[in-house]
Figure (spheres, each protein chain N blue to C red):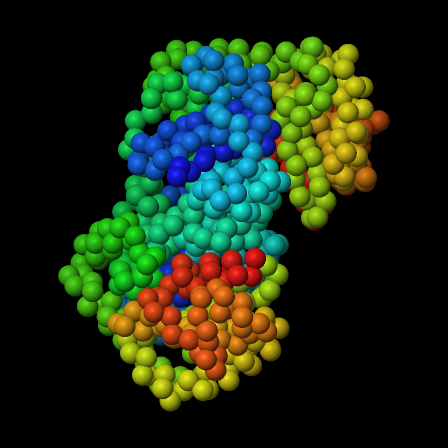
Length: 306
Length: 306
């Protein structure tokens, strides 16, 4: 029986590309593995997969009785619903340590870097396995996405060196141009149903017993939201009620201006204001320099809830 | 401010030697680090430290406001009492994933091998740092202890290769003889206060909301316990009441016969019997082939509690 390699719910490019890259590595070292996913691929991820000639991994929601290798998180809320009935054999991640636990020993490759694929590159190096050209391509794109082409404060020298190495293997001359092409795909929000936009990169967190959902949309120019901002706000309010969440926030991130407009609905907006040291106005606030949910948005909020 | 590198409560040789070895590595790569401990060193650990010329790390119980690198576990019950007020920057371990969580990204080097020091050796290799002779010696002894000189089912080829490498660096010709010397020190229980024996290698686990304490004494011949077994049993009963534990078990492990006599006091001994598929008699049962708390004792009990 193979292990399944799967990223988080509402998969981003790191989850999908990481699952493909890690499943390939595991197969090379004699551990049968199949990449799967927990949801639809985003337009950005579809662009990456097409660019390098991959199909999306199989959609698989249930893992009871299976062996699972978790990619890009260690949170119960982001894992398959029946993860408690599966055996977690490993975790590769670059976030805070979440609330997943196991009853047997496992491997965890977790590093404070910008992208899980940077860690997966370390795993290839450790095992001395060559990375195929196409896999190097999707790993590189995942890192460019997660680090916002190196602009995010989460980006480390390890990520930059990793992209440089992978670009050579993938035979990509101008990886920055490819990164911008990718973010332009990501910025094409017109015509997409509002709920799809809100959920495109949405994660739930358990903050001191409170369910908090945080979505993020990264674009090259915030004006793309001018006509739909009110609809986005109405939808996160609905989402909050539907999921019995304490708070739902949506980060509208301008990767060129390097900051985010935060839209927030909350049972206690004062917690959010305390977290970021700024007042909201009609549920909106501009957070200058904030590009990273992981490093700049989640930790202060977690502290404020503690 | 340095980070503190600290193993679990009631430290074993892996926790103490691992803290020393990892703190040295961190200092070598420009990250100031100080090894500390959460309790007294065992006679076995004292033997190892003396053999290679080390002092015990500083005893330090409070870590509020500090950066901490955790060695040899990922469990709240085994961590410093005020760990929630510290920042966990890393975890090196070889157990199941426990309930420690963080609010910021960290590094986790967790592998399903026999000893944390085997993982620390991988960290030295990754960073390209030479292991000093004396540190190689204590790392080697920690692995020989945790793997019961390779007899434990937790022992992997990675552990064996690691000991072979470290023995060369440490200039130890016959590591098996050194291992037996170490276990003979460990077997000298006469004259030691009963409570000290019970607590020598004792770990608390949270099993589905129930506090379960499991101690282990590894000796070369179980007859050393003949005269004190009743006292040990009385003491684990006291320990159960004092700590409001659901269950306390003590494993008396015979490393030559390769099995363990389990002493148990429990609110529900049927759970324990279900876990191991054997009836107890007056709170005792022989578990043939059982050497490893981590691999053979904890997981079945955790399942039985689930």
